[in-house]
Length: 350
Ligand code: NAP
Ligand code: ZN
Ligand code: ZN
Image (cartoon, rainbow, N blue to C red; front, top):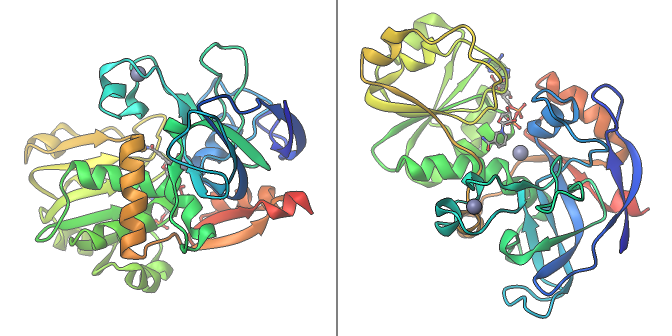
C-alpha cells in the first residue's frame, strides 16, 4: 500500500483538514501519478457539503488532476514513467454496457465510479480524489497531457474543460452560430474559450457587470447582462445554443426565450431542483428543448486535451497552497474567483 497525505472533509459542516490514507500499489493496468495540481470545482463544494445527499466521509475531493507518472503496470501501453497525465471525474465503469462500448463511460448503465465520494466497484473501498500527493488509476481513465502546456491551467480542463467541450461538440457548435454561455465561473469561462475556438459567435450571459471586460478578453464577442430585461428582450429568439452553467436554482424561463425555434439549452449545473418551474409556453412556443450533459467520455476527454493543446487553451487560474482550500470554498460560494482555484500540491509536500 502507498501512504498518501491529503486534505479531507469529515462531515458537511466542518472545514477540510489534513488527512493521511492509503492507495493500492499499481496493478498491471494501473498508472501511479504524482499529483502536481488539482483544480477546485464547484462540485467539490457541493459534495463536501453534502448538497446532493449520500456523501461518503472522510472525503478527499478533487477531480481536476494533473501530474507526472511515477510508475505504470506491465500491461500499460499509453503512458510511461516521467510523462504527464491527467485524471478527471471518473476512475472506473462497468466497461461492458452500450455506453461504455461507445466510450461514454460517464453514462455507464451500471454507474461510473467517481474519482472521490464513491466506492470501488467491489464496494469495499472509498475512492479518494486529487487534493492529495498521489493517485493510482486504471489506464483507461487516464489521459495523456502533452509537454509544454501551463500545467496549473491544464488541471481544470479535466472537469470544467470537458464538461463544456462535450455539449458544444454534441450540439455541433461552430461557425455561423450564436452561442450563449450562462454564468462566468469555472465551467463558463472554459465554455467561452472553447466555443470561440470552435468558430461560434459567443455571447457571455452573466449576472455580474464587472466581468464584462474579462469576458471579452476570454473571447466573448458580446456580453449580455441577464438581469437587464431590455437587453434580454433585444436578444430574444436569436440563439442557436445555450450552455447553462449556473450552480443554483434560478429562473430559466427568461433564458429559454433567447433560443431560436428548435434549439436547445443544455444544463451542466447540477441543480437539485428547477425553481421557479419552467413554463410550458417557453418550450412549446418554439419547440425548444432543455437538456443536460455530464462531463465527457474518456476518448472525448483526450480529444479535448489535444484540441486545447493545438489551440493554446488553458484555464485562467488562481493558484493556492492547500491550506487555503477552506478560504477558497468560501470565496467560490461568493462568486469570487477568476476563474478557477487550483491547488499547488507541492504545498502538501513542504
Ligand atoms: P462556479 O465557478 O461557481 O461558476 C458558476 C457561475 O454561475 C458563477 O460564476 C456566476 O456567474 C453564475 N451564477 C452563480 N449564481 C447564480 C445565480 N443565482 N443566478 C445566475 N447565475 C449565477 O461553478 P463551476 O465550477 O463552473 O460549476 C458550475 C456548476 O456545474 C456546478 O453546479 C457544478 O457542480 C456543475 N458541474 C457539472 C458537471 C457536469 O458534468 N454536468 C461537471 C462539473 C461541474 P456570473 O457571475 O457570470 O453570473
Ligand atoms: Zn467538476
Ligand atoms: Zn458501463
